[in-house]
Image 1 (cartoon, helix red, strand yellow):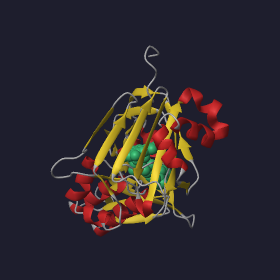
Image 2: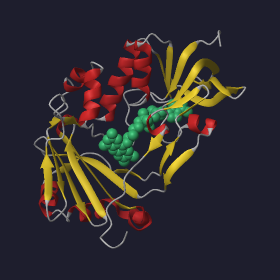
Image 3: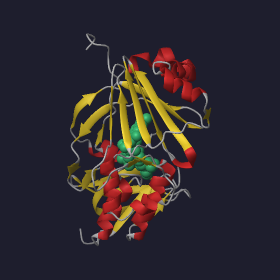
Length: 302
Ligand SMILES: Cc1cc2nc3c(=O)[nH]c(=O)nc-3n(C[C@H](O)[C@H](O)[C@H](O)COP(=O)(O)OP(=O)(O)OC[C@H]3O[C@@H](n4cnc5c(N)ncnc54)[C@H](O)[C@@H]3O)c2cc1C
């Protein structure tokens, strides 16, 4: 292993990969982190950062950078189940609030922190192959946007390459607690929908939706229905989305007075855990496990 160029190569530089690269580099390891994306850029995901996530940013010395971006704090969570609502502060004395930072902002902040820690960051670099020698992962092969293929070696390759992880595909880890997609979720952003520092969610039979504030005075609203309804509803996402909100009439009224600023984005993902380590490799973030909860079924329907 003496001629390995890196201690670790991290594939994927978003919220799992960049902190992994940053923490390894801070401990003095020689780290390469690559991503086929360039930053800042968005990804298909909403972005509520619960207080434990905020606590991580604080521990890493990055929280002030996030608050400096003007991201509004969220001091109250409210769960409206129809007949009753549970609400309260989500955090602890140390980390009292949540945030809803756009991934364009959060991921860029994390990539920059990895670079500052000494990790070599290669954006626009696609890994096409995981190199295996004598049953052990020894590196990756890939190319930058100029197309030239290069091979890089490391003692450990970390797959932080999301739910379609090519590192996981290459190493074939044991997969367990598998569940098919249970929910399809859609979201967009509205202006003129102030949340007053609240994350609000509404839970109804076969439907659930939530709203919280993010950057630029926008509010994210996400909602969804059972995966079984994907086909039936896919030709009119907006109509079905707005009909769903009528299950909470006061919120529907608030949304009618607001302006949608972006297109609807949606997805449905399967759920699984994967054994996250093996000879010369590890998986972090969605590459290792992926859970997106279903919506509640009316009682008696399982
Ligand atoms: C609709 C939806 C809503 C969600 N809402 C929330 C939420 O509110 N709060 C929350 O905490 N989580 C939420 N999640 C989950 C969250 O999106 C993921 O857990 C998180 O993005 C995982 O981060 P990651 O870094 O593991 O992977 P990703 O964010 O998927 O990043 C993987 C990176 O790897 C790169 N990559 C992949 N393959 C290669 C390759 N071959 N070569 C080079 N680079 C590669 C990609 O370009 C990408 O940048 C949501 C997910 C969905 C789908």
